[in-house]
Image (cartoon, rainbow, N blue to C red; front, side):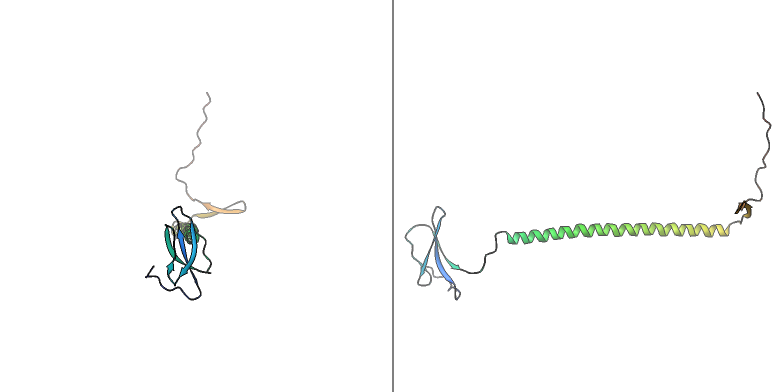
Amino acid sequence: MLHDVNSPPHGTVVECVWFDLNGSFNFSNVIKGNTCYVSQQGHFSIVVKSNAPLSPKGEGEKSKSNKVWIIIVGSVVGGITMVVVLSFLVLWMRKFKQKKKMKQMGNAADVGEPLHMTSVGDTKTHAATVTRTQPILEPIHAN
């Protein structure tokens, strides 16, 4: 007789279960609330029959697996998004520096010596007033 068995919840069915040495099992009724009648060797226990549906084996593992995949996919998508954002930032910085350099070059040109303008056909272009070396015609020697 088992003395440390609690009384079952109201509306549940309590049964004895017997496991023989070969691994098979058999159910029988409980006598006087917590006593099982046995006539063979094996392992015994008192079980409560519940009408609640059992969750399939591994459902908790599937839930953990799903959470792991969500974390992995979220990390990959977040990483790709971060790379794209950083790429746009780098391109924007390059363009900004290039515009700044062009503006500095324009300002430096405005400060320098102005060149005279001359017309060539329908186009106006810069022309230097004095050249450093004067062109000299050289005689052609025939051999």
